[in-house]
Length: 213
Ligand code: BG6
Ligand code: MG
Image (tube, rainbow, N blue to C red; front, side):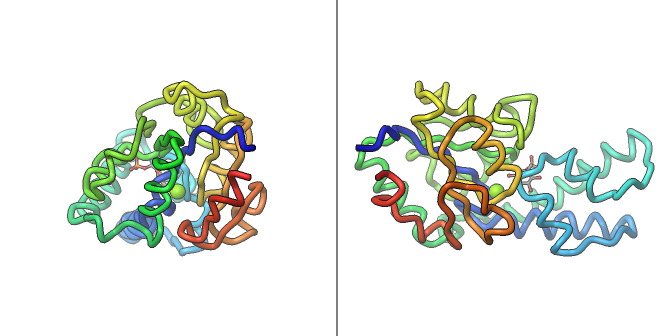
């Protein structure tokens, strides 16, 4: 019998494909600034906070603090524009069924997203009712791969770390979940999320009977 009582879902790239919008917004900023930026570069930014992502994107280029802040704000303005029209149709296939199944099994559900835009996205997707807690980019100081965000989510659910399963598409998120002492389901290629105890190509492939034991 499984002792799992809670699921903590990452948002971008797990519940919906906003990972693509983050990429497009970073690409636009990189083009503005004359910095090269590929999809491979972008894969390193999955799950990484806005500021840490910008540092990686600049590849050591020296900028003033004001310019740095302005670029972070500009990227966010591009991103906010992309997510304006987000609707229930933007849920990744099968995720809504998983949320429903977890609810029917009495398992608590939290969001564990590094994004400060997480609540806006959840609202657009119209799935707020499924979440017992939302931990987002404003919840803790230390971003993934630190375990803090997932520990914050577990605490708010009233659960111990070992009672929680994290679902993540980012290397930094898998590391954070493992560091928190949780079971982790990785979504994506083994090169990215292979450290997780379970791995699926798509979130809709998750076999709940298998992961819950
Ligand atoms: C994560 C994304 O969920 O949130 C990252 O995977 C993003 O790509 C991070 O940088 C922070 O998001 P935001 O919306 O606060 O800039
Ligand atoms: Mg993600």
